[in-house]
Amino acid sequence: MNDRLKTIIVDDEALARRGLLHRLSGVPDIEVTGEARNGREALEMINESAPDLVFLDIQMPGMDGFDVLRALDEDTMPVIVFVTAFDEYAVKAFEANALDYLLKPIDDDRLSEALDRVRTFCEQKRAAGHREALLRLVGQITGKPVRSMKEVRARGVDGLRRKDRPK
Image 1 (cartoon, rainbow, N blue to C red):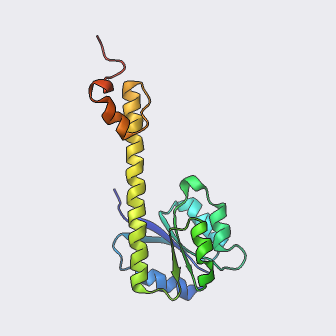
Image 2 (cartoon, rainbow, N blue to C red):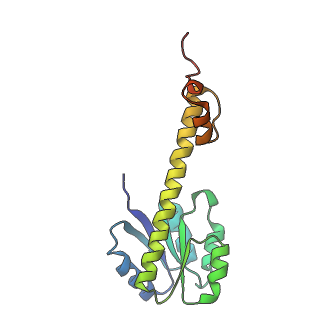
Image 3 (cartoon, rainbow, N blue to C red):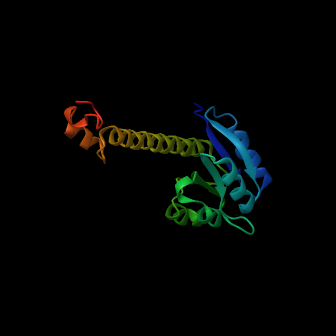
């Protein structure tokens, strides 16, 4: 299993993309798989490569970062960290469910903090996915739907008998 986070950098400024790429190249669990210059390229790239993480500039010509976010499918949306030179977008970024918000020029400690938040979020999301899969499996085995781990514990081993067990 690959534990590296597939990452896309979206910014209309080449220098900003290059700077972030340089900083991320030293982070072992980040794999930058693409760079987009605008919102349309970003959508294409996100839909094609299904990244785990997107560093997304807010203010871009044509389609801005919020337009990109609105166009993404909620169920498959990557983690979004907004990157911008304008602090007045902070509240709107969090209202749009961005995980974090970085101001340009990006401070190394602040980038590190954002990456820690991304890792924690991804671990929690992965754990929730494993829990859901386990509950579905228990439901399939027993023939009874199971909604929570608490319910599994409450039923105990005797309550988890196989549905098609021979007599």
